Image 1 (tube, rainbow, N blue to C red):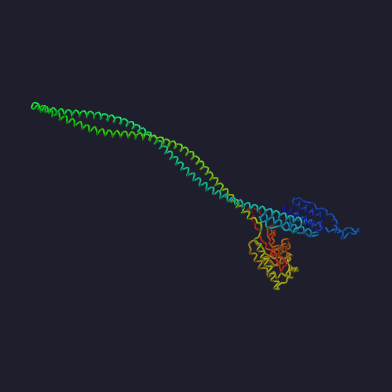
Image 2 (cartoon, rainbow, N blue to C red):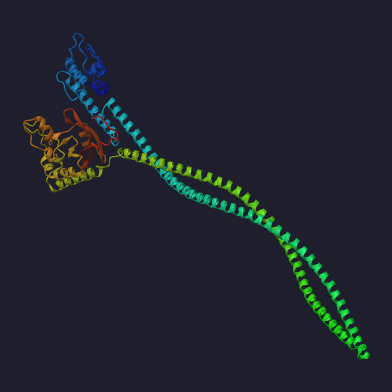
Length: 594
């Protein structure tokens, strides 16, 4: 099946080299080639045009004007070669070559197209693999160079984009780290707040219960105080009654004392009468003896009555003293009960105020607990939000990590082999200069362009004067380079003509009858004057990285990178040391069809 991409690139590519053949191919044919390639890409066909006569150029007219009488000499028929080239082009077989008249120009065009297309595909493979380190060659003519420039522009744009993404990912990672740290701190703070609010809620509930209990106790105390006040008032009333009764007792005592005083007076008077009677009885003698007895009894009775009266008076006095004391105690008790009643009234008022304050405090605490509960709920929701933010930040960090992992597969600059190739090129320069100084080889022989063909070699090999010297001094350097990594395929030195005198041992086998095997395994003493070989041999830059596709057989190709550094011998540029290695195949995590 024809590859439209290959055909389209070839259509663009062939016009420039065919148009620049110095007039050997008509411009119309070059245009037709491009049109034919485009038609082939679309699956159509295009008829072969009649070859029109070439218009004379000023140079050809001045150099050899035709005689007026002679018919113009027929130009060689290049149509068969062009038809064959177009057939190769239409089939996408740019590596095939044609023969016959005009074959050189057609093959040159096919070679130019193949070289440009090979490099473009190699660069496209590298771009797809995330390798942006290789620039396209500027050695191609016309549209080929424009194609390489366009691919370089794509790579440059991708480098800018990747750099911006890398910087953005770094910024996002830093922000995600900050967000994670902030979310962790927020979660910690919210946890502390939740714990504090839970403690405050529990303390508030306990305080509310305590205040309620105090309120209840204050209510009970108020009731008890009211009862105590009532008892005190009743006691005051009883004390007043007792005080009045005592007053009455005191009054009766005074009255009794007065009666006793009267009795005592009567007793004294009676005794006095008895004395008088006794006196009179004595005067009367025996007649008054009986009266004397009566008078004595009357005196005795008066004495006993007076003594009884005095005894009762003493007891009444003592009773009066006791009653007076009792009256004082009653009055003191009444006064005390009055003060108690006043204090109890004050306590009742204070207890009532406490009860009311407790009720108000209970309501305030209930409202505060409601607010604390709402704050606790909000804090717990904030904890969930902080956890979600932390999870989101970690997810973002993981996504950035994935992005970085994919970006790590993008190679902006390839410095993996730079130091190695420059060091080995410097070593080869030293070996060559040592050989010249020691007389093992001359500068003339080292820079000789006398490439003597090796008889019977296929592909052709050559034996210039410096081959024996390079075979002797280069193998340790070349073989040592193969140990740089498993992806290193070869290491060889080429001169400015693209000639490779000495190769790695595995590619320096003696030729046999099979030219295909020889081409693969007998690669020493041959010219590799293709785009990559010549650029490596002629570049004087500190190092040069190129890309090409290596034909693995069976239609399979492996994208290779070729890094080279110049070999300088006593100030003269001899060529370059090349290291060929397989390009990395990191695909940014994207799968590609084989």
